[in-house]
Amino acid sequence: MPRRRGLSARLKLTLSYAGFLLIAGALLMAVVWVYLLRYVSDNSRGLLGIAPNRYLLVRTFVPAAAVAMACLLVFGLLGGWILAGRMLAPLTRIRDAARLAGNGSLSHRIRMTGHQDEFRELSDAFDSMLEQLESHVAEQQRFAANASHELRTPLAISRALLDVARTDPERDRGEIIERLHAVNTRAIELTEALLLLSRGDRGNFTRDVVDLSLVAEEAAETLLPLAEQRRTTLDVTGDAARTHGSAELLLRMVTNLVQNAIVHNLPADGTVTVRTEARGDMSVLRVENTGRPLPSELLPTLTEPFQRGAERVRTDEHAGVGLGLAIVHSIVRAHEGTLDLAAGPSGGLVVTVRLPSTP
Image (cartoon, rainbow, N blue to C red):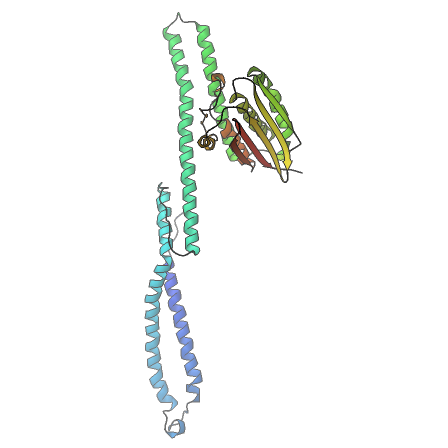
């Protein structure tokens, strides 16, 4: 919405400086007038017959006072303009940086030097905002590029299978249909995971009281056949740990954690331990599994979308789409909790989720 252009902040400060200087000068002149001229005799001979009278002093004082006030006005305007420019220089740098950011350049930083003051605090806060915004935009761009790549793969496979079915009538149609079904199932799972990730990021869901211990038992019961197939021992224990959130999203969070712990485990005779407890004002869920030692540089990347943790042991049929821990992180963040990933002392991964508890 266009606005009518007004006086600049520098001009307003200049006029303010000059105005205050004029007021101070006028007050000084008034003091001189009141406390000096009032004691001067107004007769024709002046004070004691030797000093000038009030008329002569007024004739002499008023022109000099007018000249002094004019000098004060000029000095106030010039000095105020210079001082206002120096005071507003940091705002000019912040304004230029904001314009660059508005044009899409998020890499620019103000990096204001000098002593800590209000302008330095504003500059540091603006730089911090730009850094977070740049990181968020880069993350969203990577996410969009990875999502496009992941969705393009099953579509390309489906197109190739359809071309084979159309050009090769002798090809077994049952085999093609089965492969198409598998590819479409993977595409649907990926799309649903993307929608769930977006839903968790928005945080617009109905909140109820949820007991993480019951959610963990439900997730373990659902994934028990997978654990038996992988010859993995699944142990779920703990106390009631109530929190306020979406039962559906929290179930998906625990299911993803337990499924990852089963899949990224030893080829056989692995274990998955799930513990819940109420610790102070937090409800804690801890999922720990066995496996090979994890490099420390791999841990921070596991919650990024489409990071499958290639160095973790898994079977090809459960390779996933690389959104498991990203969805978990999104759900935890939407519930105002924290997610901690740590390498197990003898291998595997230890995942700790802390959510605000509900009495």
